[in-house]
Amino acid sequence: MTENSHGISPALQGKAALVTGASAGLGAHFAKLLAAHGAAVTLAARRADKLSQTCAEIRAKGGLATSISLDVTDADAIASALAEAPFDIVINNAGIAAAATAFDHDAATFDQVMDTNLKGAFLVARQTAQSMAAQGRGGSIINIASILGKRVSGQVAAYAASKAGLVQLTRVLALEWARYGIRVNALCPGYIETDLNRDFFASEAGQALIRRIPQRRLGQPEDLDGAILLLASDMGRFMTGSEIVVDGGHLVSSL
Image 1 (tube, one colour):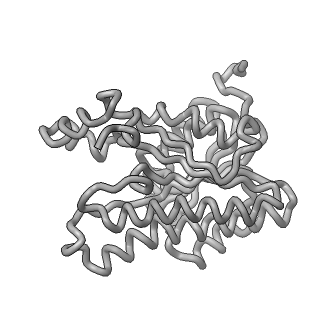
Image 2 (cartoon, rainbow, N blue to C red):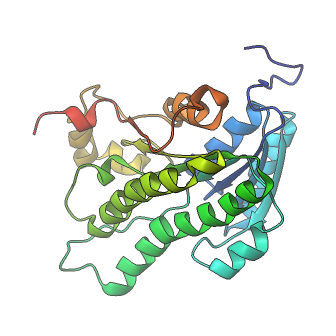
């Protein structure tokens, strides 16, 4: 794969991409990845200041990036922001977590997690897929799920339920939208090191969890690059309704 003078790969040249939850962490990483491979990327999140900073970093490297302020739980805001913006690639990355025992999970917190992680992904997918279908362009929608959508852990009832629902939603949308040339797949990361969890994984409890991963290490954001590029590009053109697990072997570890 060759690169141009800016170091940008042409694999996604001419493609328009949307990444939600792009203000930090994996969302910002995915936006930079797609831009580095030639896509014109729209970064969406609620924190406009963070989005501007990431866009500036992308442009400084010769990439194309714009940003929009977006609350994925607000159906009207999604319709307004995305109605006139056709995309070829959509990464549903916006998500939140809440740690508490099931007894202590209050209803408001449960609703907030489900609204963001599951309903929000559905609303964004539906809006962008309608544009794809109307224009006959097809496209790729990638839902960022989790290994906790396929295997359980304690004190994450809302999060695990939302991610399991997202995996099943992925399958349903893939079935319904295949006729329009729209592919819908899920990426299920294991434990990936980010600024938000770095201190925990440096603790005794975090180190104990790492020892349960067969590779005995945390994933890095770039460990997800291959799966994202496969699903976003024509390399994955015969893949829809799939879940790709990237977890260092965590799901197959012994009980």
